Image (tube, rainbow, N blue to C red; front, side):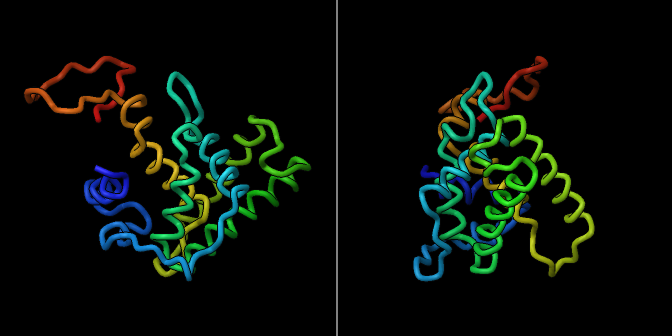
Length: 186
């Protein structure tokens, strides 16, 4: 199964709760003429944002799973033009906020400063999401977080290293004992 098929299936399993899920259900199509351009620097920035959200621990982080590249493809192929622009503008806002708060761009600030900045944005997006109307656009940072999680947990690293992976399920056991700290099954 390729990543695009996996994303479609996960979206269905989640009940379409991922923003832009209608794009996954209807199938992503390349819209090269209607895409917001992403440079290599943009993809590197997305990798750093994703790696700050899901840093390496006992398992590799989001950058190792190349989540930035997946974000680029998903935004270009699956998002409507207005959401593509929102996402791209959000990247600029993160750079501006890093410069305003720490006097440097996101790529140059310390990891703890990156974390603090993204926690601030996460709190902002939570407050926005609580008060937004149905017709209001989503918050750009929520889109980034969702694509980070989606990209990581549908990647080989996310499936095989972050969770317990069993290629072919064995017998069905209704009650499997859980030990604190056990990883989820894939």
